[in-house]
Amino acid sequence: MPDAPGQPPAISLHALVREFRGRGTPMRALDGVSLDVAPGEVFGIVGRSGAGKSTLLRCVNLLERPDSGTVTVLGQEMTRLDEAALRQARRGIGMVFQHFNLLSARTVAGNIAFPLEIAGVPRAEREARVAELLPLVGLEARRDYYPAQLSGGQKQRVGIARALASRPRILLCDEATSALDPETTEEILSLIRSIRDRLDLTVLLITHEMAVVKAICDRVAVMEAGMVIEQGRVFDVFTRPAHPTTRRFVSEVIGHVVPPGTVARLPDPNPGEERRLLQVLFAGPSSTRAVVSEASRRFGLDLNIVSGRIDAIGSEPYGLMALAAYGPPNAIEEASAWMRSLGLDVSDIGEDPA
Ligand SMILES: Nc1ncnc2c1ncn2[C@@H]1O[C@H](COP(=O)(O)OP(=O)(O)OP(=O)(O)O)[C@@H](O)[C@H]1O
Ligand SMILES: [Mg+2]
Image (cartoon, rainbow, N blue to C red):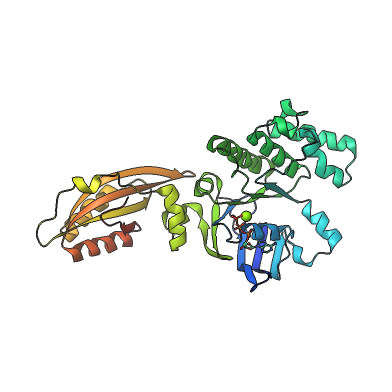
């Protein structure tokens, strides 16, 4: 997507280390993280609890100061700024939180205006800005409501409007949809996407849900134990995950393709032959049938398509298919290797994939 070559990154993190010293041995929440976020992209960070995601996000606006490494945002090296310059730079970076962090004694309008008050923006200007933001997040009719009178989705819309109040170029979201039901999550994600498009924002978002990554992100980094273990275009990471942890995350969304009871219905292999269940993941819906019949001819196998489905990430389709392969064991191996050489992701899922 917006990853235009030659354009300097909107966010550039280089070799970040952040250690916390408790009573015991010091632990590295960040252990040498480097990544670049291109202007205009939605970049996702996923990882299990404690992987270091929030610490990383908080380093972008220096709410968390790294022990070493550099943070550069829109060409400005944040790690070198003094307090006054940092306060100024932070206005260019909005932040959205999982639990909204709204002030309960203030109305919707009062919450949205709050950061502008702190920044000393005059009242008339604040009100004009709030009047612009309310329709952007679909809350015109809720202007004078208090947080207790709002749904979770509405509260997060307030959180987003508040984050946008100072016209930031960067939006940081820490589990912004984790407290919301699936339908509301979709609404908030599409709101984030549309404001990214309309306001030309760069979005860095944390989530533990691969479905969120699939729905909204252009690129993704997977974190584990303070390190980025894999990163790339969402489509590539989903269709060709390299690291076992990424594979586990991806399978939450991509899932297994073999319906329960399938194996029981398959015929037994002939004597001297083997039966193997293969899962084949491929980018693009075309020509896979041809590959399957070619593989069966070349390697003298009986390859049966047990099930399959086509889905898409962004606008790019991919397919997932289960094959029951019958034949000599080495021929199945060779056929798998051959299909891999054509760019299909083939894994042996054994006889009991449930
Ligand atoms: N202020 C702190 N003091 C001590 N340890 C901390 C502090 N902040 C984070 N940590 C530790 O650093 C590690 C990474 O924490 P972090 O909050 O970045 O993880 P996370 O990936 O955001 O997890 P979650 O998904 O649960 O939000 C954890 O082991 C955490 O306990
Ligand atoms: Mg966190």
